[in-house]
Image 1 (cartoon, one colour):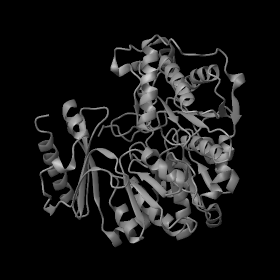
Image 2 (cartoon, helix red, strand yellow):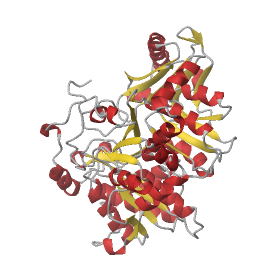
Image 3 (cartoon, rainbow, N blue to C red):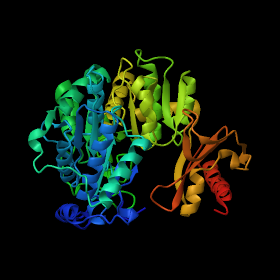
Image 4 (cartoon, rainbow, N blue to C red):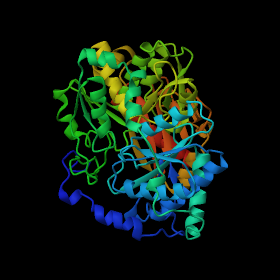
Length: 542
């Protein structure tokens, strides 16, 4: 933990926005340097102009590749585009528009040329494609999410409205890198794109539609006092619009937007990072927890949520997911009794116990929100959530709302839970622990060479020789997710009261060990130690 974690940023911590923007246009990537190539992770291509990993050339190439991809896929409807409040997002949007218009793509940008949260863009794509048009729409979100101020991000959402799968992103990245290597030969662009861009009321459509997924009347009747902190992100206008539309007792506690984020408290490592699930990044929000019935935080593109209550402080995301699932399954009569409730393999087993007690179907998938997209699209998955504070769920009538994470929605759900039950989500979680036990959960990192990481990613669970874990018989060794049979890119080992999962990091020479025990912190430490020994043994010789 950094010595200044949780303290307000000083001038020395702030980025030079002008230098960042100059580098965006002046620096060009070296095609022979992998660190400067286009690479799509779970949430698009990310990088910084100062490191020549997010520059004009990247955006020109990626956008041209998307134009060619959508043509190959027969996508001829409008492309919705939105950006967050990071400094690099605005120039990247202008670059993208110049290429989209040159390629004859019908583009729909924000009505007020303002910021667009990721869930609002997903909502727009789904809304268009559900309206019976002869064509289908897709979208681009320009955001590095909760990443530091110097970063940029560029994400493609195909017609299902959620994150693109690896087939799509691999195609786009390969084509983009080929364009960069050719000196951008083949990239079409126009100098003035604005006149050809259609306008869309992302905020109005999204805010007015919330009554079809949240019990807004219950929140208003109960007079729940809500404090919403957008953490300088794209949700800032949306929260005020929600308060106005529904007459909520809702205060936007910090409406400031500044691409340097001078008002943020530093994260655990001393960096500015808009992570609403981090106690350090949320320190200024936590300081006001007694002023409201619930305080919420969102990251820069509002796909993540943070829930703060007077009695519990900042809720662990796993805890809130369990409470949300428990509440929704009992308070959505329009939902199918047969549809599943989704979690990732590294989310808490408290969710498993809650879902089992409800007599519902648990759908356990690999890490990454994209795995929830098919079920959220067709209504066979009621809720999808991951331990990193990202989730979405179906409308009151059981149809799709968003197929990307929605931090605004999950924050409003906390207010609904208070209004309907008279209990805060943290109070309700304590009741769940009395019923199902109290788990101890932690993620740690362990060193691994690139060769070992490659082995771990393809490791077969049955290759693990151990039969016991921390004194208990092993009941499952998984290398594929039970919910959809997809490879998990690592391994998960479980006993009756504990489990661990090991996955290679995509950016560092480490592997991540997620572990949980219902026997307390001491047993969790045993699980972690044995997990490292088990995995290291499996990787020996790599």
